[in-house]
Amino acid sequence: MAEDPADLPAWSLPAGAGERISIGVDWPERVTRDWAFGGATGKGVRVCILDSGIEAGHPLVGEVEGAVAFNRDDEDEIDVVEDTEGDLCGHGTACAGIVRQLAPESSLFSARVLGAGFKGSGPVLLAGLRWAVDQGFDVINMSLSTTKRQFAELLHELADKAYFRNTVLVASAHNMPVESYPWRFSSVISVGSHEEPDPMTFFYNPSPPVEFFARGVGVEIAWLGGGTILSTGNSFATPHMSAICALVLSKHPELTPFQLKNVLYLTANNVGGNE
Amino acid sequence: MSDLRAAVAAGALGSEEGYRELLQSIVEVARAIFGARASSVFLFDEESDELVFEAVAGEGAGDLIGQRFPSSTGIAGWVLVTRQPLVVEELDKDPRFAREAAESTGFVPKGLMAVPLLHEDRALGVLEVLDRPQKAAFSLAEMELLGLFANEAAIALDLLQKARAARAVLESEGGGADAFARFAARLDEADEDKREAALQLLEALGKLLRER
Image 1: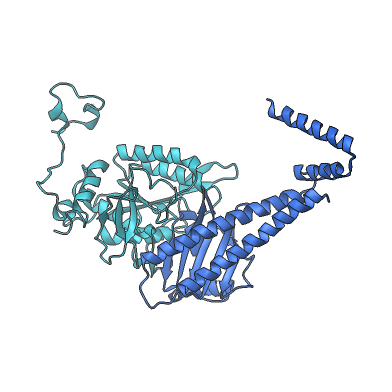
Image 2: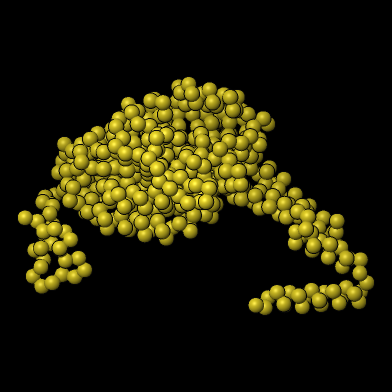
């Protein structure tokens, strides 16, 4: 029987204890897409969309298992409440719809940090991310970023905390050479766009900071009011990658973010994913 | 008003006018390069938390300047709050969007490209290009081109905001600039000895302020 992870050596390795930290993944000789996510549906994987909310019941989204909203009160305090308003602008619904289409049995959660005005959106974003990391979601989709340097350090800490707690943070990169966060941190999976029409095509980028390219051009996205629309942007490439992460994790729940990134690398279309 | 004050004010006002023209020229060129029906720059007004039409080329030019809407609404709002460029097509298929667009800007775009205007660590506004010809699928190369325009527009917008801030300082009664302008006027009128004494006093004052 496997040891309780809390009892395992964490800070140093005593003599002869190598076996106690044996890896619970049966790695094949060659990691293929079939091994990584063949037949996977995302079942059992909890994906949090940190965005503008989600329109529950949208035909492309289906059920949303939980939704909270972060708001600033008059004293600049940020409180978290159950979200009954859905999506204020449509961006989060679009992201959720993409995850649902590729990982149909994943569990979707919404943390609304956008939509209540631009002013003060940085602290709200931080509060939302902190909450999502503390909830222990398997995947957090962040199709957004901040350019404010004052938040960079805290975001960096949160990104690392997520990484060590087995929460995968998938973040939209910029397609312009601007400094923004958290996508620039190496503990997250940063996503830019490619122009291929296949939603499962993704590439590893050997010239970071953008680490992966996923489908982001001419994507049919869920649109408020139950409809769909064609759209382009890294905002929509990101949930493609989140969904692929959910598929891999539903088949291999024991993977750490480090191992998951390796699987993504090995199965990328420009590495081994075409075979 | 002293000569100094007049000179500084003229500089601030002149540059503000110049930066407005630069912004206007950026949207004109963006519209022409993309062969689009319209192009506009929105300035984010931090105080009111709104986006304001600052420059418009093509459809709506002339009528829209100065119109405002809440910062996180519409496609421009998505782009501002997420800091992500975005292209949306087939907008005219959505009756709700079409009605709202028609009410606020007088025409319904079929599609639009929008990109945040980022300068240093600030998001200053949004650049939009509406209704590029639908002859070909949208490409990432166009997104890059749009990004280049965005860099230019962000710099112009930053300069425009600074020129406006300078003007506000000059216009504010009782502000530091006002006091210096009065001082400069007295200095102009003073005879040689008094002028020399005043400058020495000013030098000493500067030294005092530098000391902690």
